[in-house]
Length: 421
Image (cartoon, rainbow, N blue to C red):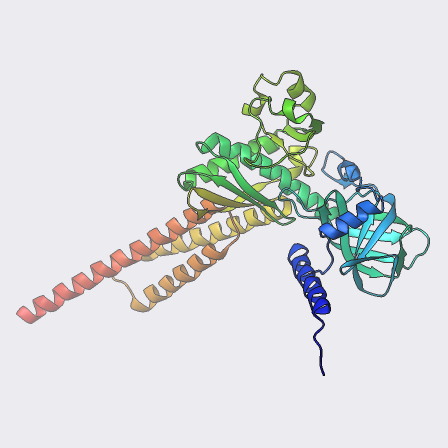
């Protein structure tokens, strides 16, 4: 007779649910820390991770950043849904908890760092970091292992500096954009954000969409703050005292730690603390933020707003680029601008030289306008620049249509006159 192992079934079901939740939390990985894992770590007296070194970095005047490597100790290894004393397998997905880290765990809209953890005792072991999450104060480094790691192993931490620098550039760019929107949009409040290496996304309250001129003005305000080469300051401040800083920006409903990290552009945090009622927050960007930032606004390079749209009632979303991505967008906008202007010149010349249209020529020109309009619509360029180019192409199309209409009217008149005689 067959018997059903209900206890075994329930246990397997619970493990499957944990794996499913973990995949959602870690982008497909089955490595995570649930409440039971956190309790186990505490029962073993394993201390939470010291991640203060994520803020330790320097730069030169040109924005070339140096992130020092750091040594650490492996305190725990997470494999699937359990802790193990060691992992010894090629390309093995697992999670590592260290006593301290230089890596930033995903938080506050900023994506996680990438990097490598290598053994200090052998030249073979390498852990490639794909994801970093913070659970109850424990920083879980998730990735693939080549070689062997044990609890207690001494390791070297090396940051993916290109990714981190891009993240910092976009995060400070988000603060600059927030300040610009505050100047332009009545009662604008941040509703969310995403800081990725290749772009930034900013959600804010607004009663209507931004006009083309407002988008151009927002970029202008950002460019002014960037070109001023303002230092970016950050420091921990008592939460109750930080709230007294006039003009400070914070996400409504967000639970901030105490002390809270204050990030200020152009004004030292010490000055904000010394005179919180002076209103510095009304003339520059001052925000509660635990993310990583460039040390000077000039290091942002360029900020380009590529889209602005509604995502729900009363909430708008901006996607913007900074640095090299923004420079590429500007070059593409210039290329398209030249192409559109050349086509418009050709249209104007065609109309001025001939009052009678050639059907074949007009068809070809209309096809060029249609193709170029499609390119402009898909192009990653400033939204206000895109709208300007669309308007130019639309006006060119109207000129052709007007000439075609006039030509058809004249032809009809000739036919009627010929018929009469």
